[in-house]
Image 1 (cartoon, rainbow, N blue to C red):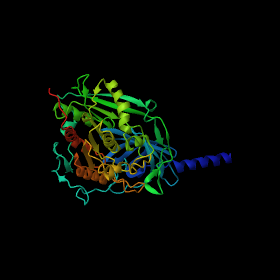
Image 2 (cartoon, helix red, strand yellow; image 1 turned 60 degrees about the horizontal axis):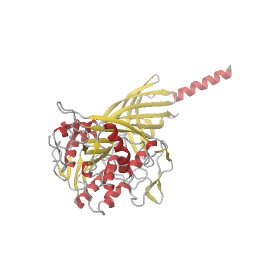
Image 3 (cartoon, one colour; image 1 turned 90 degrees about the vertical axis):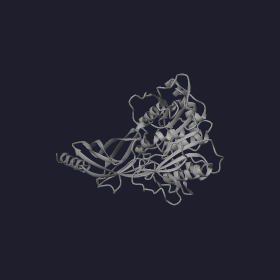
Image 4 (cartoon, rainbow, N blue to C red; image 1 turned 135 degrees about the vertical axis):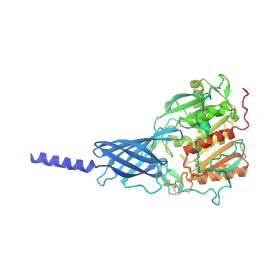
Length: 476
């Protein structure tokens, strides 16, 4: 009996130690592919349930979760870039009262590590997505930055002007990004693509919570030992405007993205106003993960024509069949588009295949050193665009629109190679494009973060109109 009582007491003590009341303020520190950020959450524990809020982009997001002994899970949704992202956290409480574990970001299936400690987060901390928390606010008139024209607050550049412009700090959505009464609405078709059906991307993944280590001989080269084959399923979305005539070869946008109502509405309205041609949009969902060693990183950050070839040979035929459309083969009728690493991929699609794409739109383009595996021909990844490639190559027939925010990502990460500052990278892009005489428009946006959704709503109609200059708009 004494033994049983002792065991019961021990179990009770253990339960008390592990099942701590989590009510209060917490600082959540995350590491996603080497990108580190902090976030403040306020938890309320009732029984085995967790409620409360986590701050992101100055919003209080509603949290739901559970406690089972020392195991803790919670999740919340956040609308960004016109789509809903889900953050799932799973960890354990240690004897010191801290929580550690892994988190998963959907729909990208990007994973990372987190630790949580009691107390308020540092001032200015409000995000947990790709190191958007607390980057420095940059001044567009910093020495070395490209000379740019300050526009009145709320204004956007004229759609027929090349050059550099400074917008903000107010970001009022353009009327074209919402559904308008009397304007025909396009249809969106959706289908799945499996890695087992791909000859180009059979699928890889990095072990959860791992990243890589810099090469001791070269900090710009990351060594990843935890990447391995893994299947994936991606979703593809095809927008078809109501004005499309069956059997005609239509111009189109191809982008690495998720479903995007902002883009759909902008196309509906701009097509109806005859400011852009009748066009189709194909948005290719990611294959999972982020950064070096992941499927998404391999697809979007590799410096080659491989991603454009994947879209050309595997995605577009399926899109034509699923949506019952025909896509033009005229490169002047093809635009690549993306945000963050998708922006870097959009530039790569046109750079390596101007025979396929000649119009490029990027928000917070990752023109940084994210490439893996290492390629000695482009040792600095997409940093090479503004470091060597554009300046050392003949001008290509590409029209480009670029955006960067004053609080965009600055991520030294473990590499410490000075090639992970999004603002500097995009400023350098504008400088070299101007030097080479490209038709381009660069907007530096005040009061804006990484791939800022409000900025997109403000600027997307003008960006589309700028990029499609010179392409014929059919007469009614």
